Length: 366
Image 1: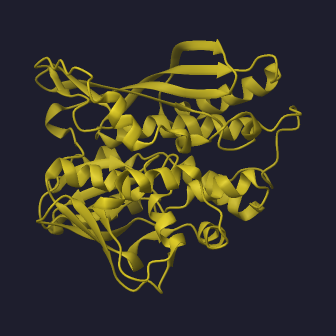
Image 2: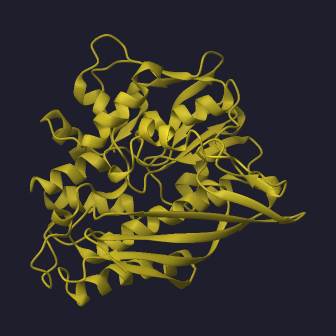
């Protein structure tokens, strides 16, 4: 993986910090899960037979069967700046968008750009660096940017529509977990906290480099994980945090997740910053949306809860697999350079929800 600049400063070509133009940043600017559910509550679901995966369980992408052995996978993802360096912003946004294809077990084939920029505020060179960063990540993923759409906006917005292909028999949804499955997380948590520290000018060079490394690491293991028969469910952790996206898994499967606190990996500087009171507003909104479904042990500190609800931008894959395939799943992650991937819990019978357990005094830092 490559690192970002020596320090998280605005690009020299721009007199304006990108993050100062946005009310939120990255996946932290997603609409809160409770409000989103209210908005979509009356949306009609028209599901043709060929639409294998639609909007019924907050899946990462739509899947449409076109033949016995091939289906099209489609997704879109875009957001406001999470960093000030324009090229890094473009790289993060593109990596995050492509992740939804990998999370379905599919192979990306091409992308379309989504661009909204305050053209009277940002120089053309800065905007070009954003799109160049996105195209660089697409090239790394082996796909072209085949077109797109742009508008003049108040806040900077960038992202992609991504199209992929998959064998319908290898599609991995977020609702297929089974009792006894091991829960495996591909990347450590804490990106939202690091973004909040950046906005407050409290993120140092090392913290910024870690943030860029994790948010620009493509979730390629998803393709190989989909081929393992013991992998029953797959998603990626983004704006609703670990707790929110794990709850989607639990609700879809009608199961309960038992999570071991000492096993959950966190980015070390994120732990330092959250302990000093730095976190995002999105984390608080996330907790308000699903607090009643998450059981925390007595003595859980607020900073620990903030880590569980921290919105991840371009976060890791979340896997539910049979215990017999646990080692194979971890080997796939290691083969692609995901050194922090680890087992964090187990799916059990019970009312959909999450129970956190384990020694709260121990913090697993990556």
